[in-house]
Amino acid sequence: IYWEYDNVKCKSKLDKVIIDHYNKTITLIDLKTTGKSTFSFETSLYQYRYDIQAAFYSMAFAWLIKNEWKHLNNYTILGFYFIVESTKSVGYPLIYKCSDKLLNNALEGYYLNNRLYKGIVKLIEDYKWYISNNEWMYDRDVIEKDGIITI
Image (cartoon, rainbow, N blue to C red; front, side, top):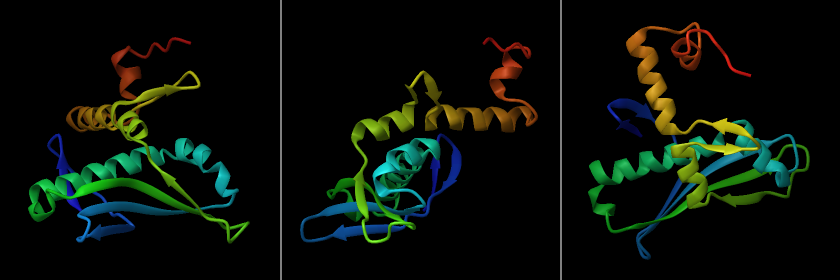
């Protein structure tokens, strides 16, 4: 899906979309493999920021319906799911449904275990700042604080 968010061109490639025309529902799915147990996927979700992927892809599909596939406007999106399988313990896949809270946190940002996780809104804002300032050497926060880092 080639789409736009806040005047930034974006691209999203979903693994699977199930459109049920009878029940007028849509399910968004991403497939993941892990070298760990499928039960530990939540740790990987935050480590690799799959929450952002889920929110970003959900936003992309909503944009697609609003702007190009208007005939699906009255369909209900049932949610975003990760289907996770282990490469070490094959045969025990799990399905993880992303809650609205998780998707909203990925959009707005949040703290978890005293660590700030930037959301899509802030990341896009940062991206636009880097483009307009042509500054790539240091983090925006460091530059705006004149190189002073509080610890």
